[in-house]
Image (cartoon, rainbow, N blue to C red):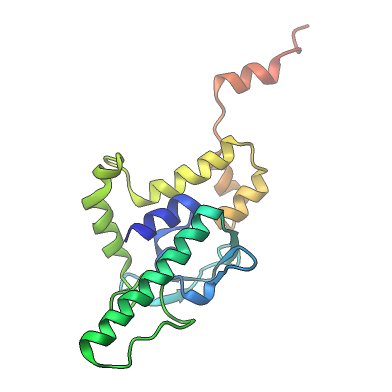
Length: 184
């Protein structure tokens, strides 16, 4: 479950997008995560609603390491299940969900939310939702003066105005900077 938190913090993905990821969506060579699916409340994979929400996200080194670790943990979990059951299944493959149980079944988004609600205090995030991790990531990008169009693409918003309304805030220092030198 901690992988969902790391993915939200390290990429700004939505909870349903994280739960919708399969092994095939990770391109280690290109350093990209391909967000092409989400999930419904029952954990069933579904296509993204808009073309803008289908996107390739760059993988920072820390997230790349987390993804490698997650895939290795899934294989270890599957090996244990095969050993316990004497079955040849489950086997790690391209269609294996990154958020799955020991049988390879995709988790439900609400399971991730429940886990977060039980553990967030231990991370010093009292009262924060998992979606707040997405907002924190994208707000930090905006504060770094990331081009607004790039921010829109990273967020997966169909409309530029959505990104601007949510992530661009003007503070007093920015107002002072804007009018500096304009005194007649």
